Every structure is written in C-alpha cells, then in structure tokens.
Length: 307
Ligand SMILES: [Zn+2]
Ligand SMILES: [Zn+2]
Picture 1 (tube, rainbow, N blue to C red):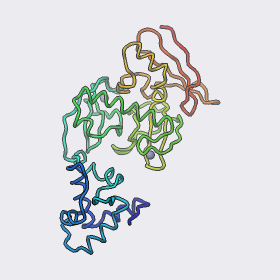
Picture 2: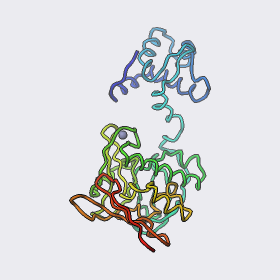
Picture 3: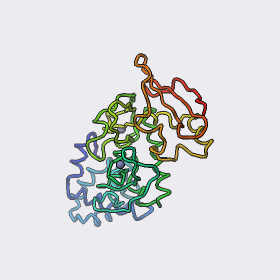
Picture 4: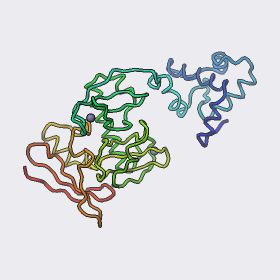
C-alpha cells in the first residue's frame, strides 16, 4: 500500500512508465464508464504490462494513494481523480484556443473595453490595449470553453464573489485551508510576477502606490489571495440591499463594474487604531453608504449618505 506525504513522494510515484500506464488506463475508464473501475486482469491488459509480478508491484505502489481497490476491481481514488482528471478535459492543453469573451465595464487605466482571454491556459481579463486588469482569475478555462458569453460573465461574477468571500473570512479559496488576512498597503509583489500568481484574488493593475488591499496568503498551497478593500464588504447585507434596490445583484456582477471594488477606492481614516473607509454605491442615483473597516477587514461602522 502506497503513501504520499509530500509532493516529492508524488513525483516519485508518477515518475515510472508502468505506473503511468496503469493510471492512464484508469483515467480513461473513469471518464468513459459509470462503474469507473477495472478488474485486475482487464487493468493489466489495458496497461499493456505482460509480467504479472511487475504489474502487481507497481499497482501496489499506487493503491492507497491514487488508486482505490474495491471488491469489483480497481479505480482512481478521490485524490487520484482530482489530480488526474483535469488532464483529460483538454483545458490544460497549452495549444487550446477559445474565442475571447467581451466583458462589461472598462479598463481602469485607459477606459478601453474588456475581454476575458485564455493565455497559456490561464484566464485573464485584458483591455484592448492589453492592460491586464487582474492576474489569475478564480475560474478555470472551462468557464469560457463551455458557457455562452453572457452566462460566462455571470459565472465569473459569482465565482469571484465566492472566492473573495472565502478569502476575506479566513478560508483559502484554492485549498480551503485556514488563512489570516489583513488590510495592508498594496505592494508591487501583489501584482504577481507570473500569470497564475494570486489565483483566487482580484486586484486591478493599479498605478496607485498608496492604495490598500486585503491580503490573505496561504502557507499551505502558496496562493496569494489579494482583493481590493471593497471585496471585504461586497456581500455585507446592507451593500447587497443597496444594489438590489436598483435591480443589481452585486454578487453576480464582475467586480470591476462597481467603483467601490476598484483598487484605491478606500482611504485610511486613522492609523491607531487602524481604520479605512470607503463609499459604496456612489455611482448610483440616490442614497449611498459609507463604511469603515478595521485592519482585519471587519466593518466597524456604517453610515447612510444622502443623495
Ligand atoms: Zn487599458
Ligand atoms: Zn491554500
């Protein structure tokens, strides 16, 4: 029975031709049949390993980690499926191309229109002048591959809201481990130095050096969750209500269409104790809200601002 306690063990486990052949056979059957399993003999045949002793040895290395043994045969374990199934979806093919989707809103740097594109299998929101509005979207390529544009845009809003809500309440959006977040000055490193950094966070590529963001890095998976301060209050009941009264579901709209979710929308009102304030709904006709938050992103006061 195998065991995996570190990524190195996992690479050792995968770095062998016979074991890959066994896994490939199980991935194929996992995708194609409801039973998702193969008998010992059938698995041996499909893996193309004639020597029973050798087959047995390598299968034994996989059982208990990537492969589960049942009374009816062998199948991918839950962990194995999570790890290996994405390889068969085609989304991870660096050559794959999908049509770009036009998005609502505009680039905060140049005002040009926005689109979501698949760049080396990472989704990016970019403007027509190629400014990247956010690094590392929360969504998988399936979002643009399988959904029509309008649906994909709503899904993008929902996914972002979901991830930001998790990240700002102490749950890593990527691995669901525990994270401690705080509001800190925006640093260049928050921008991410590669396209897939910061997955789970949404920060506009701001030139504003002294803006603040909510950051909750995860030590377990390395995700550097970062969101503009407005992300901390997006699902606050009063904020949801303010937009709902104008028939806008703030949870389903892409974040950059709301000025309060832009980087730089919040201003520090005191350093000791730390308080940062922002106006929500300034773009709406009628009443807006002024909220102040503490360093952990919790709302400490809320005021109605008359039109
Ligand atoms: Zn732009
Ligand atoms: Zn994590």
